[in-house]
Image (cartoon, rainbow, N blue to C red; front, side):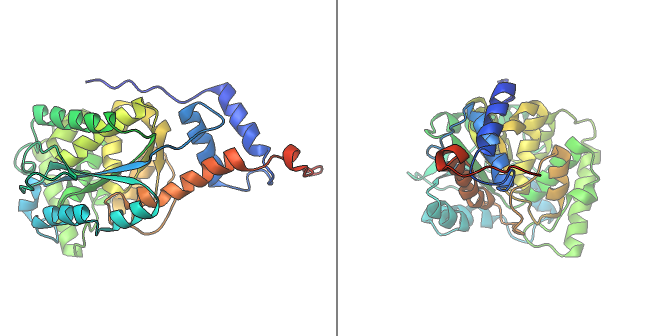
Length: 344
């Protein structure tokens, strides 16, 4: 299952988009980041008149065996309880998705709970949680491949061209921090944060657990091996979904720390995937700013969020709409008969 992602780079189209943006009735560059978004989405769709269709967010949920090491402020049951909240429409992501007309999909990637048959839940459980990576690899190579394929399959049936990513899983900031450390060589202390609300002592304990696990699995280095050893089923499923979405030339709305850790794996496999990514915000989780720096990308929003669930992806979507709408609907100097700047 090898991805094949084409770069969006096109010199002629880039020039055409720049001319179209600069010819709108405004001073050059005065719409700031929206101009960059408009150009990026035009390049993704290879047109000067991009269209956004049927935006969706997929929230992937999974449990983590490493919670046995006491690395979370919340018990593991919160994972399935929050999935029930998503299904009932009561979580923050439900509110923001409804507000912005985004179709929301909830996926059981590997939750340690039996939800039974539910029409509104995508049942893709690889196993009832990963194993404890402090003692053994989180998943087998075969399980990792199954999760990647499930992610791809979920994207294959979507009708739109914009896809946001969210997650839920007690313990997954620990998994994301371990993945980040292994794929960037950033020190573990700079990857670890409070997660769902750890104290300073709790953060230090989480750091020590990751450092010991990294030493235990010191031979692991390739992106997919790192994912299988330290990741979660929800993170692996996101990697597969991201690769598939970029292959389809979709706009990818990247959420916070855990989602970006999945994107980090995908980008180490296929660097061109970054062309398709809108980084919604910089999370208040301490490692996220460093992870964004490692990827050499800039987030659109800074709202001090650290909730996950895809909330940042939902909140940035109106900015994406605004960028496309001004490109398509705003008058040019010629059509509006507005004089252009004549002197410096």
